[in-house]
Image (cartoon, rainbow over all chains, first blue to last red; front, top):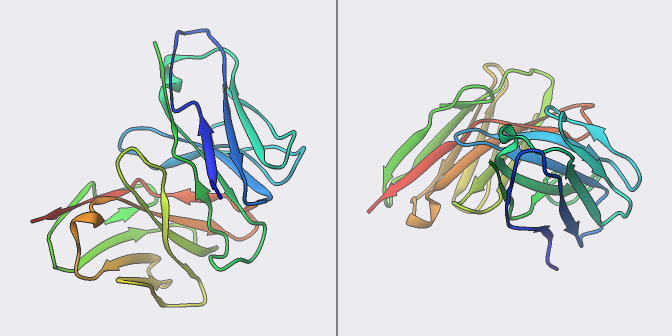
Length: 116
Length: 113
């Protein structure tokens, strides 16, 4: 199993440009999440999904949109990028219940985004 | 020590010594806690978890202690190795929060030769 994968790994955007980050998981997890991580800080939840076709806002949703058309994929979109969105973006997934590790979230390797 | 909100940025230990990383949490309704390790340029990796009905849980070379009275969590790493150098995050899950973990700011552990 590849676990959680993210594309692209790096991206540089100009202010006002748009892009989509793709997250894929092959563990048949119901829950998926998008976080951002800024220097010296922990992860902050942007949006999450509790199942195919559903999405919900997290702690810092403004400026982002998401879609979960397929269970294994979770897309994060930036419609008009701003320098404040320069960050490292992590996707994660988890089981609804149970499993050896309870509610453990499995993370992807991250996407480093710079907005100039 | 680290807290969900405040953090101790760095901790340096000699190779072979034990490390203790602390975390304070503020939500008394949190009932599940996880420690993650994040190496440079990588995503967070699960280390160990603990439910609120437990005080202690042990893994391979790691132990998590939970003190609900003072809302404090600690991660102990025995015989710290160079490969343990990373940022360590604690995260809490609050009952009814749709599996939303709240992460602390992290502690950078540096293992000295």
